[in-house]
Image 1 (cartoon, one colour):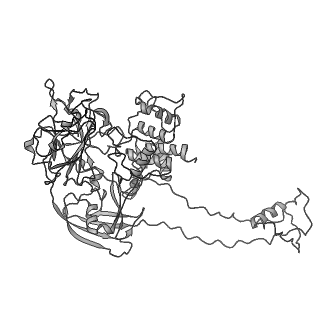
Image 2 (tube, one colour; image 1 turned 30 degrees about the vertical axis):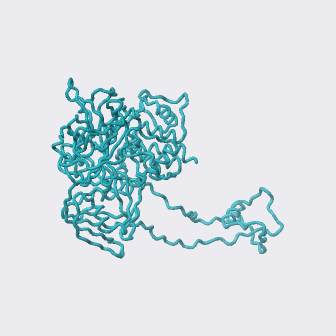
Image 3 (tube, rainbow, N blue to C red; image 1 turned 90 degrees about the vertical axis):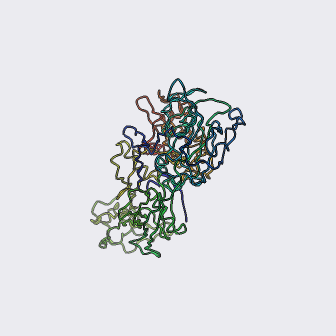
Length: 633
């Protein structure tokens, strides 16, 4: 087996469009998209806060990776007791401290994606007796894993607009998707269904019916950590002694389970004979298995090559040694219909017939060239007898010719022999040759490289059309196959990982660094890991205070400006424009510099620093960067 991790712009070129579906439970809420933009791939779950210990059918069986805040004034020694979070809730607790974390294990049946919420996290928050619905809420991110290595984090939303004092209260209804929302004695519920859109789930790396690890990551509460929309998260801060999240237990509502379906799989290559094909098999598959997982387990790892794309899942490049490269690819058919979603997104159902078929793009051939009749040439050009020359500057009257000369002058060896064209040109200047009436010879031209044309090109804004095509020609961006065409998705948002990759490629010639663990949420196997490492190495990025990079989050305009300014060492002059809505000190000079350089522009005196950048906007910015700094190298 050979597995590769590749860039998101190549992913968009190669993979079929994946859609978000199957989440239609009342407990799952979708974020409202901005005006004129497509909904971001975020699913925020409005947790319940009324789960009791009696509702639980099992509890955590162990712990690992307890990493509290190092300061003893932040977490006292008496609270560094991770074993207290294991087993049934009894009021005892372990304190994480600011930005601390812990992982609890579930080996007794694990956790499964059953009806309703699947597990609950217990904390020791307390209510405000003077204001029902408000409480002392210490919050944390929640992540789950099947194998302890690949994680999916619940999306979240915090609507608390202002900082919260050290022992002040927060409105419970302002918090969604975070642990710590419930008060002491009650658990905050989590539904694994809300994670179906996550790339780790689509790729089969996190199996929602087979969860064995839950990680709790404290949020400091000073606004440095953000929710899934980029909003600052506030909770009581600062506190001492027992700062941060106080975990008292995690209980199970739905255990891991297995349901099997009957299905068939077929691998064919209609246009090309190959050993081992066609291949067919009937099999039982577990509920929740994707079409890609079925192919992988049926064909075998040694007979399959594929690439994993962030946010889109796996793309098959070779089966039984038969490789396909774009525009050819292995297509998935489900019950004789071309699948509308990627193989990592399609969940196999009872009775499904899965067919993998190698599609070979018809090659356009040039029409046969009709040979031209031989061109009749004039007799050889005569020359003057040896020793005779024309007086300088004189020419014969038009239409006259010299009489034939029987002894042409020899070519002097030290001088290059004139070409036929040079002889003809010289003879014409002397008036000694009558120019034949014939078409000028056609100079062969190199084959033109046709710019990509996208099926949704008309959906792009008029000001972005040319930049999108240029970005595709330059290899900065590409499209993604959809049906019989290729789409660009101009209104889709660009992620932090994607933007970082593009800027590193433009600034450093696509030279990624050796992947290292600089951020807790960037795996060394992620397709963007080397580019993030390079950006960190070059001081283009710093990440967030909680040690994360948030690669899947949308890139904001102000963060994009900062990375561009750092990459190309831009500084703002005294004449650079300023914007009244830019308040972040770290971004102010960079925003003025990129505006002065003409890379990014404002909106009637404002910059909209927190707006997310769309793919069409990124295409425009990338082309401007290329023209200003890269194309001149």
